[in-house]
Length: 101
Image (tube, rainbow, N blue to C red; front, top):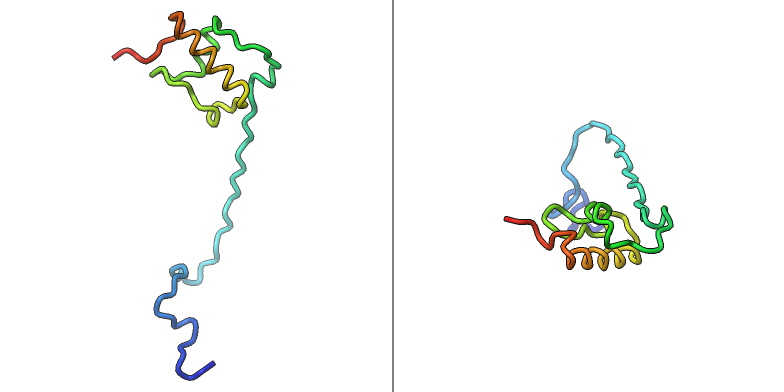
């Protein structure tokens, strides 16, 4: 190393972690998320009936919004069928469009 350059440990703008003393690091637990599966695919559903309001009610919030598939775990095909069935059930007043104030 040249005499005019400071050693790497004395760099004025080091961005490393703050010193922790002599404590050993505790290993972090690995979080493994359980894979969500489409309940309609498991049950081998070919058609989501819009007249089954009890089933459809479990896929909408109390405010009337449809729960996204990343939360429910439904596949894209069944989520589209679910959206259509909920829209039909709303049009014939089996499900609410929005929550009453």
